[in-house]
Image 1 (cartoon, rainbow, N blue to C red):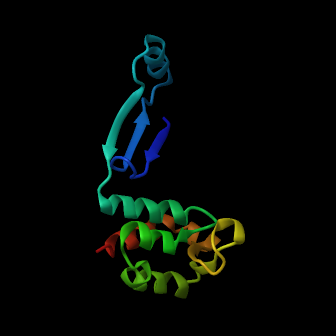
Image 2 (image 1 turned 120 degrees about the vertical axis):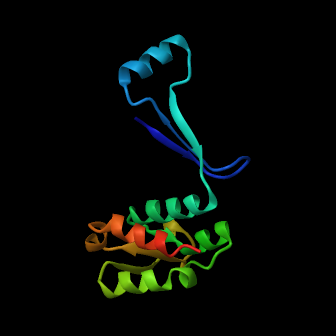
Image 3 (image 1 turned 90 degrees about the vertical axis):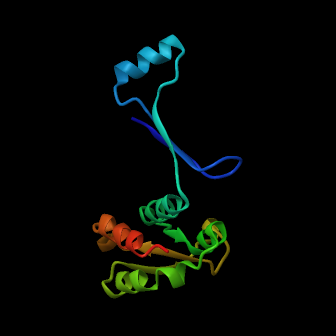
Length: 131
């Protein structure tokens, strides 16, 4: 079923998802009823981890400046050990942002193809090191 995420803005950051059964979804839709299965409001730590996980899944990586600004954290200090391990294992590192991704010189933490194969373990390491 489709999952959606609405970042914090006018209200709290919320994740919601549709019914898993296409038949049930279509039936509710025909009746004019909501098709949502469930929704949850994310805690600040869940929002941080979501940003890390989603960023590392992309070629662009995590926009470190944006993370620091949005959460009031110092990403590089908090996660120095994890970042060091990722770099030493050849699983990722910092790369400057491409012009279409942000300001020149802006740092992003991204993974290599080797790192992507270990994404779940890397995200778990970040979770274990959250403040």
